[in-house]
Image 1 (cartoon, rainbow, N blue to C red):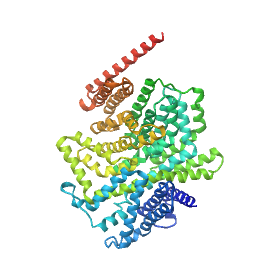
Image 2: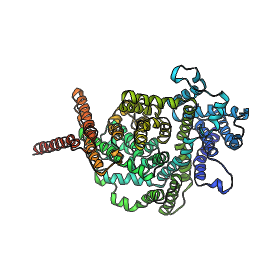
Image 3: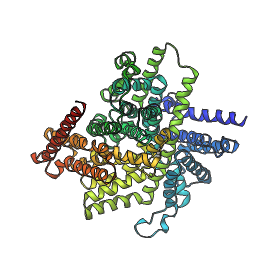
Image 4: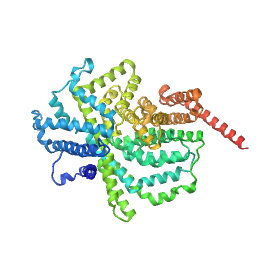
Amino acid sequence: MTDKICNLALCIFLALMPFWGIMWILSVPDYFQLGLVSEQSVTIVLGLGVAAAFLKYPYGEKAGYLDLLLAVVGCGVWMWASFNLQDWYLEAAERPPKMWVPAIVAILTMMEGIRKAAGGVIAGIVWVILLYGFLGNHLPGVIEAEVFPPTKTLVYLYTDVNGIPGLVLRIIVELVLAFIIFGKMMDVSGAMKFVNDLSLGLMGHRRGGPAKVAVVASSAFGSISGSTVANIMSTGVVTIPMMKETGFQPKYAAAIEAVASNGGQIAPPVMGATAFIIAEFLELPYGEVALAALLPAIIYFLVLFLQVDGVAVRFGIKGLPKDQLPNAWKVLVSGWIYLVPLAVLIYVLIGLGYRAGLAGMYACALLLVFMIVRNRRLPNWSEWKGFFVGGGENLVPLVMIGGGAGVIIGLMNSTGLGFQLSLALTEIAQAYGILAMLFLTAFICILLGMGMPTAAVYVVLVSIIAPALVEMKIPPLAAHMFIFYYGLLSMLTPPVAVASMVAAQIAGSDMWRTGLVGLQLAAAAFLMPFLWVFNPALLLQGTTLEIVYVVITTVIAGIVIGQMTKVVGSGGMMGSFGVVGLLVAAIFIGGGTVWFGTTHPAALIPAAAALIILVTMRILRQRKLAAEIG
């Protein structure tokens, strides 16, 4: 009986999260003259998320009365804040017990929810910042904090727009949630199967076909899903077993899927909803941000594709027989309607200038209509449950981390830690140069971004680090894209490497080995941000000639990086030296416009030399193969 009650309660909490998010995005409360503000709406979603976290990740094997009690209490104290928030704004200076007592319970239950839903590492980071917000005044030197009285800090975090119900949660509820729902609707409606089948039809018969299917399908779905983990769980459960069956080692199958799924977050047009957030921060048109991300995304997937091909060559992995694969043309003819909502989404965003969350809802509604027309029936109970409850499951860790991000941003602002960190980065740049500052920035982004969803980590990092980068005359778009990329790369970087960990579990592979392979496959993503800081033409921010030069040098550098998986096959010291040599060569070639000037002819010399060598090597290999056959 207890199991049934807890399962029912969990389903209700999970389903209410996307349901309330949809109502809020569509401004339904305004139609009933409820007069809610954004902070009230996001605390409702946070309360539901806390409750779901206790029941979804119970202390025992199954949820019991203790889990249910904590879920109700956790939800209740956040609902209490939502109900009273507007009145409390008038009493904020007094801070009566009815404000700070529930604040203690709310913050503690949320912190435990973060630990359950997002893991101990992320919860530990938030706990360190939280304790710093109360005790940082006892620390020495530059890390000494300006600390509020405890009750003021509690109320500030609990209710203030700069605290937990602040910018990060607002972005998650009003923007990211729409694309999580859109991604879930794609899965439920059959659009995900359409993407997989089309990818199989186009790439399945090629050398290492299943891995190339993973690259295509994951990049397509990942751009919309807004979650690397959700992307892996949607496409990886299909592509990883196929890769293993055709001869890919488990660590390669898992790493390819992890890197491809993570890359979906940098792929226009949607970029996991982060493109809209970047546009909002920089007050730029969404189309300009998406266009700036285009060339780096192309190079990212070009390098990954080449490395996948190299792995297939090393292990002699052939494609799947054509008679076992879907016909790409037939799949396109039968499922083209699934492409229409995406086209409508782009038109509504760029052509009509609608809010991103609202545009996502319109695309989602159109996809639902097409699903009904295609199936000639209304969605059944199982499909509705998959949509709402499944959507809620995807939202729980995101909302929990969003709450934690609110703690980090709020206390970094109130204690002065954010300013001190920004000042320290600026001083490092002045003393040791911008390159040293960028290396430290990359490290901080990876450290703070460990396990965080793309949107949440970007918002946290950009609030802390971006001002220092812009202070050093780095173009704002280049600075924000640098932070975005390195925050995202934390998903692939050990020791946490959430993307590699999830993919490794599906593949039955060791997480560390998967993570190391993933670092190699994502090499281009680690290098490109440094290049566009010194040459923004890589973001299509420059003259036509500057863009042509940077396209030539970076594409050929990417091709050189793509040879690394072939060299690794040499094994031993030679293989290691070969990888390092190729990496150094790629840096020298790709940075030609930095070393010699953005339009200096000498910048193309390393690229031209590399191209000649690569073409010569390919001709020699083909002749050798022809001689062996002959």
